[in-house]
Image (cartoon, rainbow over the protein chains, first blue to last red):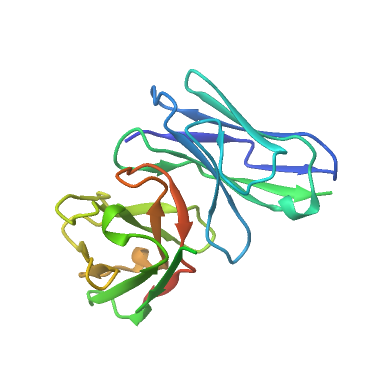
Length: 107
Length: 121
């Protein structure tokens, strides 16, 4: 199985800050990566697919990049509604696997 | 508007069986692969199983292989997950999700609200 390792496990930032979340795959997954946002009590929401494509309706402050087996999600200017846990997910091969999550707190 | 609604969860004893369902609307159900995910309390999402649009191809996580069966009824726009031999560690919220692209089996742009399955004596 492909292991997805996220860092940090939690991050605290102020409104307006730039926030980055990292995800590393245990093997080459090309661009078969998605990012999700999950708010408490809700289902995950697709933010980014194919490593860097923004899902429709997602604010443009969210962006993502890829470099080899390393992937990064960036929130350019943190907003209060971004309080959530963020997960990366690989779709290169079954079983589909997720990172362990990054919990984002607002200072 | 795409809508997914799971139902059928509940409290079940270890070793028991349960079938959860997912009613879909707002898209051409038969042309999209569908997946089940679950999320245990305080944990991240875990992919459980997927099924092709036609229903003739399925995949399972090792943790449920041989115990769970995914199926679909395209005439009823409904997805199912039959769970047998339930164990304590199957306790979770179970979500159904639709793949973003017709024919794709990769990322998931619509999720239901989830149904809670609790396995306990």
